[in-house]
Structures are given as C-alpha cells and as structure tokens.
Image (cartoon, rainbow, N blue to C red; front, side):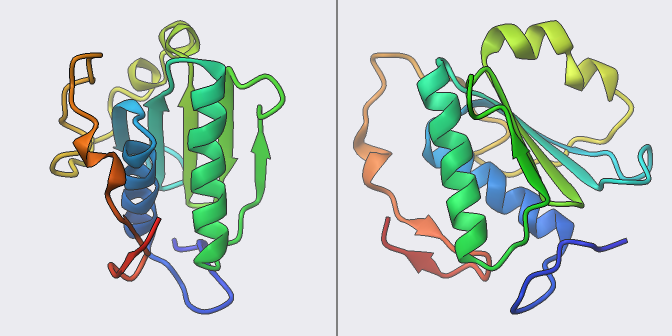
Length: 154
C-alpha cells in the first residue's frame, strides 16, 4: 500500500518517514521514534513520534515538516494541534507524524500502545541521546536535505 503520492512522483512511505524524522532532528526534537505499524494498521505504514520541549518547539518542528513536505510536493491530508502546540499530528496518508510535549507523550504512550510494531532505525537520529544545555550548537548550521537525498541550504 503506497498512498503518499505527490504532484511530481510517488514517495515510498519509508523514505517519507525517514525524511520527517531527519527534519525533526534538525529542529532539535528529542526521542525520535519511527514505528512500522503497517502490519498492525490497515490505514498507515509508519508513525514518526518525537518530542519538543515546549509548545514553541513543538509548533516549530511541525511547521518545518509541513513546509518541507509541501516543498517536495507531498500531499498532506490534515494537520491538527497547531493552535495549542501540545500534540501536533501531521497526516501524510501512509505516514503520520506526532510531535508532542513530554507530558502528552508519556500520558498517551503511543510507543507502548504500538509496542508490537517494529522500530525503524535511522543512524544518528532514532538512536541518539537527548541534548543537554552543555551540548555544542555547532551542528545547528547543518544543511537540510530533500526527499531525493540532495542537500538544500536551510
């Protein structure tokens, strides 16, 4: 099942999930998880779940994913939660992105709810440690990439 179509080409759900996870990482999202829920749910292939430390960061992460996906020609079915910024959900059909405050993530426990779903590992993204205030911001000027793997200036 592959419903993540765009005006220019069809995007594989796995590639779109990785793209969204990388964008979240660029915006300093924490605890990024990519769950392959396709065998458990008939309506979606991947969940990307990440944490923003405050409502401003949650909104910023969601906005970046939304803008970048649109720029790549990905059709979004809906976005919800931007008004309050506690839990923003972006639905790209086969990929659903959840950007949550720590409290919402713990309370709703999506990873626990979908514990039978295999986790998709993205080196340096899904297995990285949360940042501390003492971490260097030297990587903050990194370049963002496009869905075809090319780099674009941010």
